[in-house]
Image (cartoon, rainbow, N blue to C red; front, side, top):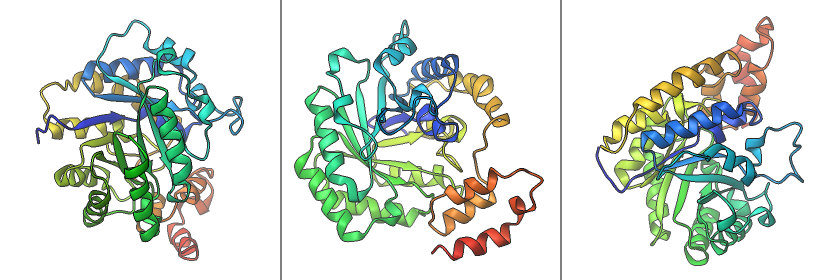
Length: 318
């Protein structure tokens, strides 16, 4: 499907960092950044800009904070039209950390929020705009949102912000194609002069399919990660998304090269992708934290593969 108006965002380092406390080595981050730029992808997100008052710099790596000086090292000498993004959690960041755009290599600040924190998200997005950045608002855990509260949040975003896009985020990998339809229609009811985006997780192996459904309905901002790396079951694989879009500006070869050299070897250190515990979280519309805890158990621990018991435990959480 060739639609030149579609903007593709790579979240490899940001979302993948949720599985290793954002401790990717500098060499890898720079290699991923260069590959994304060489591939023609529109935006690359190199991590979070979370507050150092809330996160320990000893426990978390530099891509959890994305200091401008560190980002300048990454991009130094790499000429590209690809825009650079960071994500700020509305409830885990401080607007004082947003420097004027001319002092930073960052082009876009994406603000992640739950519906209950929409006022904080709007404040952060507006601060980003006031400092010269483009901004988006990404509404997380959409499958847990109370319907009328989501309506109110979308109306506020429309009336009170100048963000370029508002995202449907399937944080728990619980949505099906008809759910994407439902949320797209709801967003379009309120969002009149901003794009709609989709960010899909892969707990039920639907991350790619649901992203396609969003595109079919008209979403023009879409996210992916190299080899689907991300929290828990991961995300829509960027290489599949690029191939589907058939945009002649894309070159998949740099993507395939960096996947083979840097992403595949990570499987020896961190575990992501479809498996039964994450599937259970997805079908029950639960946060994958308990699934992640189960998979952190030693492989010799019989509880790690007792999926029936885990499923029954999760049923008690509903």
